[in-house]
Amino acid sequence: MFSSYPMSRRQMLQRAAGGFGAIALSGMLAELDAAASTSSNPLAPRQPHFPAKAKNVIFLFMGGGVSHVDTFDPKPKLAEDHNKTLNIHNFRGHLGNFTQHFKKAQWEFRPRGESGIEVSDLFPYVGDTIDDIALIRSLTTDHIAHYEATLGMHTGSFNFSRPSMGSWVSYGLGTENQNLPSFVVITGATPYARGQNWSNGFLPGCHQGLQVFPGTMPIANMNRRVPTADLQSMELELLREMNVENLQQVVHDDQLEARIKSFETAFGMQTQAPEVFDLSGETQSTLDLYGLKSGDTTSFGWNCLIARRMIEKGVRFVECIDVGSTNNWDDHSNMLNHARLAKNVDQPIAGLIQDLKQRGLFDETLVVWTTEFGRTPYMPEKDATGRDHHPMVFSSWMAGAGVKKGIVHGSSDEYGISVADKRVHVHDFHATILHLLGIDHTRLTFRHSGRDYRLTDVFGNVVHDILT
Image (cartoon, rainbow, N blue to C red):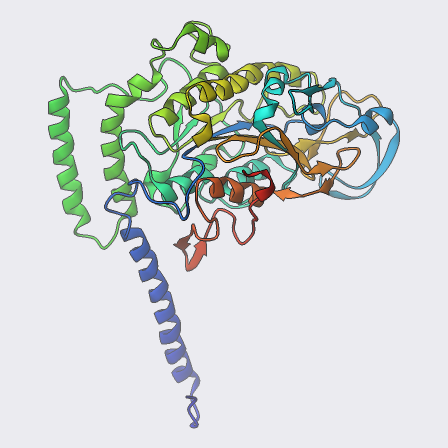
């Protein structure tokens, strides 16, 4: 009820401050309550919102921007009109009137598998597995720069650091193996946006991705430094008791809780991680699938094989990044560099799919292949040898749990410039991945700074057409 008597400015501010303060306090208490509700074991397995098709995700990221018109999106009209001119009104984010020249693909496209889906000669091994893949030719993103586009593909946010998709999955589902992290990123190089790509953001710290470095020492301090496991257990128990006692003296300390959990996970990792990285038990035929030679611990084939071994052990989300922010797919001046990079990943990716199928893991593992954006079907010069950034349309694919096999979803126009049919935004891409894990992307939220955040922000639609 409104008061009928006059109110001074001081009275108004006092009452308003009390009202605003109560709102702010209510929001803060809600955040603390949400965080505390999962503090007992934030990585404990949780039931999805609905029955899931996928138990795990292997996310394959090709950094730098893979050309869609040279790999998975054939354009006969582009070849026919090679070097002909066109006018565009937006070049690299600059508005105006720009004359460009069409540039044809530098590799031949051929029908592959029983589906007859055309894939270029850059990916002959992946082409042989096309009947297991749902190819999306209509993906689009919001930014033309590497940093922002890479960040967006990983976090759903193109301008601000937010929790990574792997962190959201860990937060939503936990993990089945408490002795290994729920979210692992395998990369020896630093990608655009760096560690923000696997950051937990405002989620509890235990959901941050663990970076694994290809090589002889993939995880630091993997072996214990004390003489016996019993002695180490005693030391860790004493440390845990001290941390818990300290935790009880404060209302809530997310960092301390995460640190306690990280010590527990680290102890378990010292018993299980060495086994994961020990490939001595793998058969020669399996190593051959990935193109792995004896003693190789640094190739993308090693990354993919370790990813398979991790999901076998219950790791929920594994990402393999092939290159960093240099020497990558960003071929402005020489598209022939795509051949070198494709050769590094083609056989391992196909081998991963075949290996998962042979082990009965394919139907419960979602394999995702993507990049941050495509590359232009045109360039300013005639007979240009490179291509520029192209966020308006590009290609990606999914395979495995709950995904239709041997299909193409969406299309770009006859030149590969823009989406012609069934547009799929990055937010839709993320919503679909979460859906396959049994997660409603609109319900997987975390309250931070007075707002409920989610991976897909306030957008996203599940791409049901590619699902079984």
